[in-house]
Image (cartoon, rainbow, N blue to C red; front, side):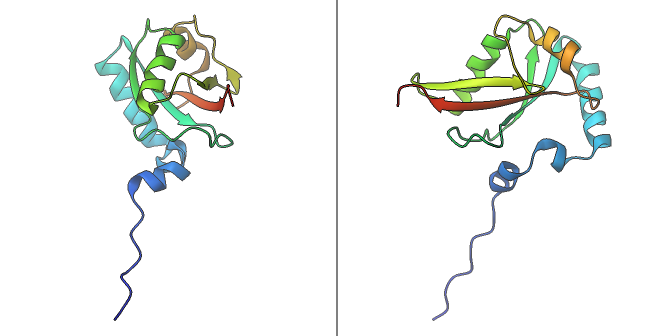
Length: 132
């Protein structure tokens, strides 16, 4: 009897280890963000990924977001928390450009000040157990 072959890595496993910037070329990212901005001028294209050092929170299955420009960072954080199914006792922090993202600012303001040369806004998240 032979042992069954090892399972093939799933897409979520590979995307868990590679960032969006590593998966797509600069040209592909520019094309995609340009198409999105042309079709949805009142929305902000966001790539939200787990901070490399943070293992207390899961990686998002889908890390691309198209959010209303007037959405606040606090509201966006709520959306991410729901997607990750985080319990209330778990803390989650958003960062943009290595700095904490302030909850009352709009996503449009954050995009204006921090968008990448490829046209996407990159946000990372990290967490820790606040009560444990």
